[in-house]
Length: 142
Length: 142
DNA sequence: TTCGTAATTGCGAATAATTGCAACTACATT
DNA sequence: AATGTAGTTGCAATTATTCGCAATTACGAA
Picture 1 (cartoon, rainbow over the protein chains, first blue to last red):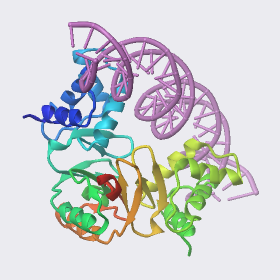
Picture 2 (picture 1 turned 180 degrees about the vertical axis):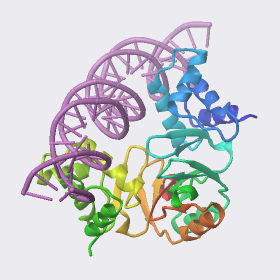
Picture 3 (picture 1 turned 45 degrees about the vertical axis):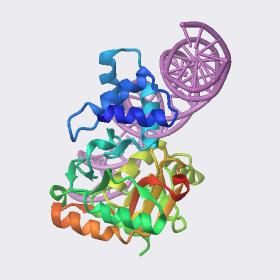
């Protein structure tokens, strides 16, 4: 079973209705190259290639729902830029420079320890698939 | 020297001008109880107690500048809620439940390791004073 | 297959946040 | 103390996101 069907099955299991709009949005999200992330606006554009009959508000609402259900990651790339990707996408850590805005992808392996600690100490299941950390990149340090 | 003067001195050193607006915004931010964080809107209200002559756009721009200079932390509490605090505020980690929105403060000590790793591996200086992690809290797991 | 209904959508309006630009001002220089 | 100017602000316009509500529709049950 591919990512798309897997997400749809999960939603059905939770009594969500699978509308054409939702399916198109999920396809747009899943049909990207590895390491690719899309903004809400980009997703809307991709969906409109197939049909112009999907409202931008529906895109926002569907993304919120998918994030809340843990099927999609909301990735903050510095205030003004917010992107989305399915959680099947592979673990990522984004190092965002708060000075130049540059985004560096880092190995997220180290966060496993943090995740384990948070669960044992607080019973909190942290989303560590896509994490953004802010700071200053090598270039901007001088 | 207190937090406020320290921030102002740092800004002067970087050739930023200390306008009445900026001073009021910095005071509003620094004059809070430990563990308190303010939204841009709350900061604006606090400043307006002293004078109505500060535009909300100035508050946003000043906060952006302070964050970019590393003097203030921008703390994301779940998409719609963004709060600010001076970095002198003490290390924090916010565990934000993506289902119920509840925010739990956790010990941030463990992130020190992550910070060291990121610097040695990527020369990236991560802001670990105020971190938000998203996930599912104990209550919402069932 | 049809029906009933609660979930979902689209639309327009409301709200939040950002930006361009002309006017203003902090402060270094004289 | 007066001056020049680059940095900063206020305002209005723009853009991004959310919300209320009536119309529509997915899908379980008959």
